[in-house]
Length: 229
Image 1 (tube, rainbow, N blue to C red):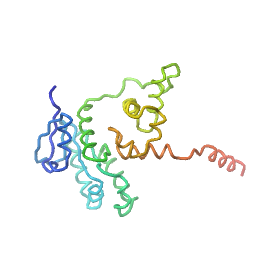
Image 2 (image 1 turned 30 degrees about the horizontal axis):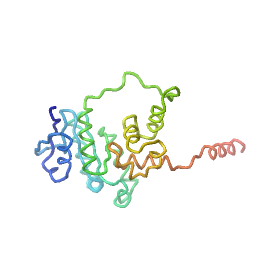
Image 3 (image 1 turned 180 degrees about the vertical axis):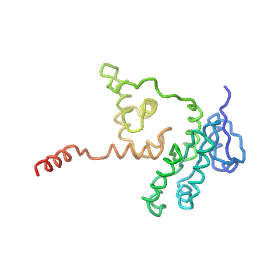
Image 4 (image 1 turned 90 degrees about the vertical axis):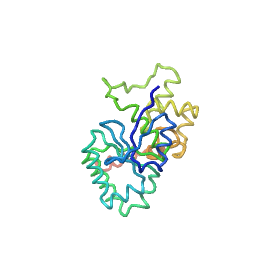
């Protein structure tokens, strides 16, 4: 099998990502890239930033300049943010202005955003982008109806895949590793983040949803009070 290929900026040599890519059978070539940190094909490139560097680049305006350059050069530009998202709260001077800047730059320049926890996950994300670079939308949407007449394993897959951001493939990985839907749904954010393809951002979103109190009755009561006034 011919290894997949990616061109990385020379400054990425010490990041640990090229080493992890080589373990995934991705051949890395280094060059002094004028735009982006990783070029996967003529259309697709990735700008990698640590959480700390992302915050710094927002305040010194580098992010806007880099976003403009990568979106002008590539049809499918990605911003990959690596690290613990919890650091944002302690490092950002003003959370509202920080997220406002991120919203502005991603929408204005069409950046796709990927979050990873470490260089190993970053390499996995890049390798999967290479694998699915020619992915096309589904010809038709799959049915949303639960497989009532299907086998127990299929229903288990359906149950776990209904978690936020977890599709069939990730559900299969989680069930293979942890054994049952009950065990999967009791995982901590840290345990979830250790599964390839999830990462900290998605793990935190899953745990937030799983731990949130159900408020339907409270909302109904509030609505009834409003209608009675």
